[in-house]
Image 1: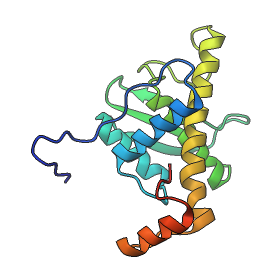
Image 2: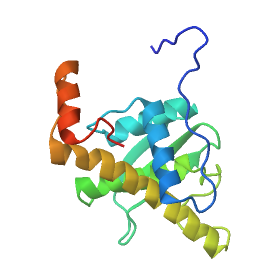
Image 3: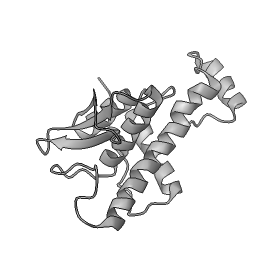
Image 4: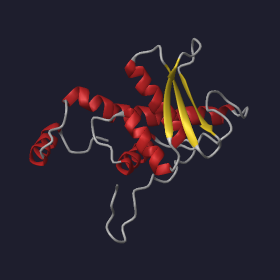
Length: 178
């Protein structure tokens, strides 16, 4: 159970992104998401989904299924306010699956799921809006992936000891991983 100092607010997700956010705004947004979720490298994608679902008060379930050729994943809201699902192609690589989950999590975080429609395709007929949604979701996925998933592959695991971790962070070029 999380405990907070008297008067301190529990962690919450950052304010929503504007339309066509800059890459800098996306990075700042992702930093806030990761901080609120309490995630540290190495990032476990499904654990991040669980933490974000907890913060939103709506669980996010990741399911791996056989999908038609050319379709790799989609997300949808179930029962409007109960939970969200991310469905990922079971017949692709683990790294690709992680990226798909992060992309669909990007749609969820950016508020692209309205409780009735999926984000797979353009349901409004507004192609500029569809491009903006896809760009934002993909940018969120790329920022999270490049800073978290690749961090461990490049540097390995962080030491558990706080003193060793501080030295490790300094040698890696800073403590910030996102």
